[in-house]
Image (tube, rainbow, N blue to C red; front, side):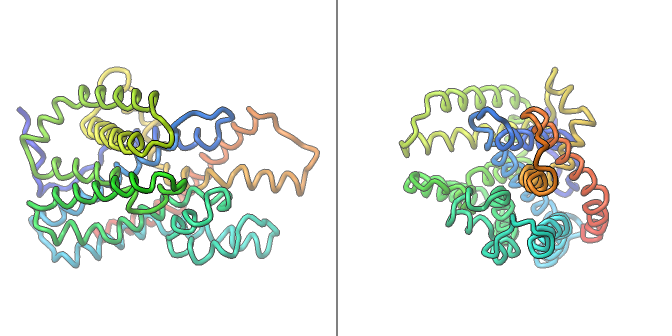
Length: 356
């Protein structure tokens, strides 16, 4: 039986996680762009949360257990700097563009009430207050707020709690999330709150604890990963088919089923898929889409809004049919994301390595 990966080893790139990001971001695009509503495509965001919970927790635990050990405060400082280099530059350029476009270009997509919330990475609280419809093409940024807030407090928990209590703490966090969801099931924007996403973030964190600490457990999970995913996925499908809107019990069970599925899909992506799925997930082009998925997620919502605004202002007599419009949205989103990754994100990613 293969032994688990030593905890003092650096976390290497896991390319099939990039393919999973591709899958998740395409689900998100379909949720927002598809002319026909496809149920539960917003679960792509929950897949992203479980990936984040896993990667961030592994990075923190491995940093703490590294032979060239740094102080906990130094680990947190480096972690925060690396996250800032990864997320802040393109995010704030994105916001600044729309803020300036309103002031100087007559593109009135930005609202003044957005400024204090979005520039402080707290848009999820505003969206919970006013609703996603009133946030226009910036409604999707709630999830970036959730992740950034998670990054602010998670290192302190993982580094300053004794290793034997990590799993207990994560389980408590997941329980808090599920209990709050159960008792507030009538809140239509419940998911925008940070702690209501602890269950999917926590699913990734639990997997990270197995991955770094428990050899027997992770080997069993690795060897049975495809069976576990098949069971979890079919179980989730059955739950979604029979799901009854308005029942807090069904909502609770659905969210637990979702955690099981995102846990298993990240698990398989860590160690690799078999068969046709494996052929797809190991494809470099598929992985590349996952590599630029941050930009895809960030840019995709404003594209149709900007196009419609420009269309109405400069060429009102020109109209695209629905298929052409959707293809245009996809093409522009992917082009912007590729350019952003090459010319904005990559230079900062290189700076990030100084704080490894």
